[in-house]
Length: 294
Image 1 (cartoon, one colour):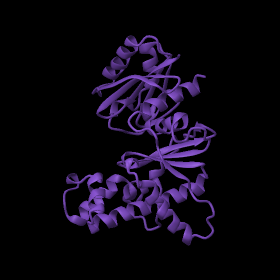
Image 2 (cartoon, one colour):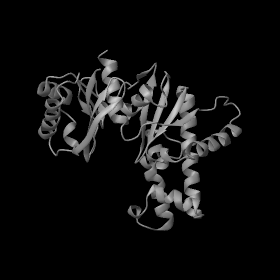
Image 3 (cartoon, helix red, strand yellow):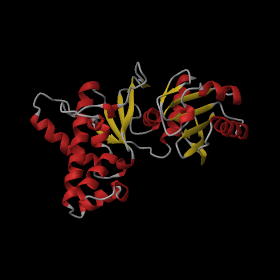
Image 4 (tube, helix red, strand yellow):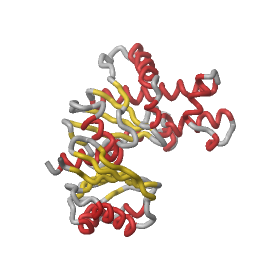
């Protein structure tokens, strides 16, 4: 059975795992993210020396990752942007390397062995600090001309925009939910969490009830737009909020309200939650490796 060395490079930790061609994770762990590029390369090299029976290295990381191996954009790890990271890792380890954006890897994990298994045209949206995601067309990633395929968070939901705070990521993300409640309650943003806001809403807190209702409303509007832009088989929702058991029912309720008004719209978006969470990026990176090196 073929095995692959996978990494999920984050701002605080680097997760690593040995993943089989059957989507089984045989071993996994994490190390602190190095503060310099040379240290990162050596960490990867040491793992490559430890696991010598792998077919190659699959890496999930932030930023706009080109096929050549240059990572454009910005992230919490500044030193990965600019140099050809893929080439440097190949030179250091002698192994073939695949690299992809973390949200795209999450999408690939779902297509491989998750909620989108067997489907060809899929959108995956990840809700967290912002809203990102992945576009799957004919079973493959669609990265776009500028590597911005899946950057749903830039969407505008209103014509009355006045700043960057009006994009979907800034009005319908978990961070946006927390900020709106903190402002209404006149408390420090850092003192609240998304989980606490949902709990307060369930307990009858009117401010939180209104904020959560608007959160679902804005998510539904964006999902409606995505359905008619791309017409996917399914739109999957990931991120911490996807653990909520009532998430899909709540958004479906808001979609019903939209479709009751917009009589022209005959197609109802099919939505579901992502199956994978903490291991999604490791699995998706390996699936991408196999697609490129089949």
